[in-house]
Image 1 (tube, rainbow, N blue to C red):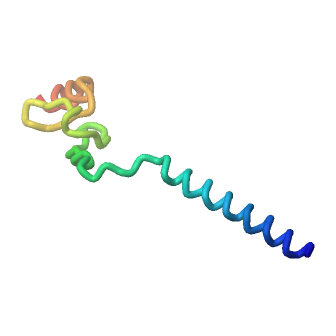
Image 2: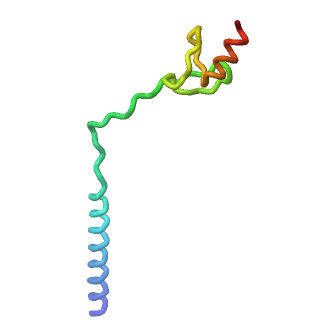
Image 3: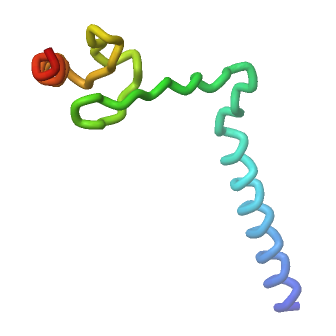
Length: 81
């Protein structure tokens, strides 16, 4: 009789534990399939120091070269002209 009672307690405890785990999974928001990931940015290297940065953040030089800052553009273009 003791073993039957212990088995019943274990089964009930397992049932409660399993239901809590399933409830926790259901609370998380499912991923939105209609949302697309962002498109990758085109990366360019600074002509002066070689640092890579997104093209949208780069400073354009006179000849179309890309720089990470106006200082580097000035240093590079000032030394070539």
